[in-house]
Image (cartoon, rainbow, N blue to C red; front, side, top):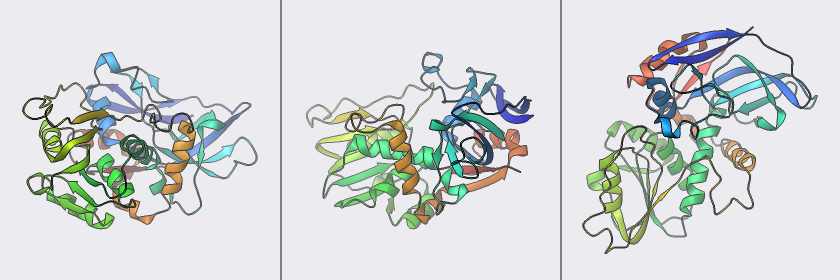
Length: 321
């Protein structure tokens, strides 16, 4: 028997058993080592805050059930192949699979984990993939002045990748001074929104707040671009399109990981993008995003705590027996 975590109804989750099966042709059996809670999306699922009109767009690759529940949801899983093609057996792999101790998936849904990437860090691959797509959408240029508004998981990862670019300026903008530890680990300047430098060529907005969006637009120079990455769930934020928005010819553009950024879509697949994210994780700096850890057996209580705003502010790792 296999065990998986299910959100049974808004605000309630439990571990359920299900009958396992052997892999067929072109499939592999994976025993999970670690999974990660993608806090922003998964707490929205847990609380039943995903708008019904976009429920289909929010489907995870191996989701079972449907919103608002019962639903088996998640997409950050690292395990070891126990059965399947000989070249994969014994290898660690990443899959966009919900929280479950064993599962069978097609082999083309697996991304090998390099030997120099620890299993805990490897669960970040799905989140780093989002950050890669953001930067493909944003297309920063030599000497650009960039502000990343919101130092949460996605904003922090965007800053972690952008710090390697030859930029003129990079600031991580957040109201929470506790994010200074993350910024320090990344070697990026953390500033309060009131103190952020203006005349930016590019702003990446990840705070999921009206104030952050308004401040991001304020920070742009004339004809600058704001890339909106935030996910608001059922909330409908007000966007300040009055004042000088039109006179300054500002641009707001959405970025979302569901499709490869248009600038790379003709030459990169989603598998290429995920493999790139995994290779990027050979840098130990990404350990700064691993801020919580608990047992798989405790996942129902862990999800309650995370949805209540307690505990890990970034990636919470789930360890399996």
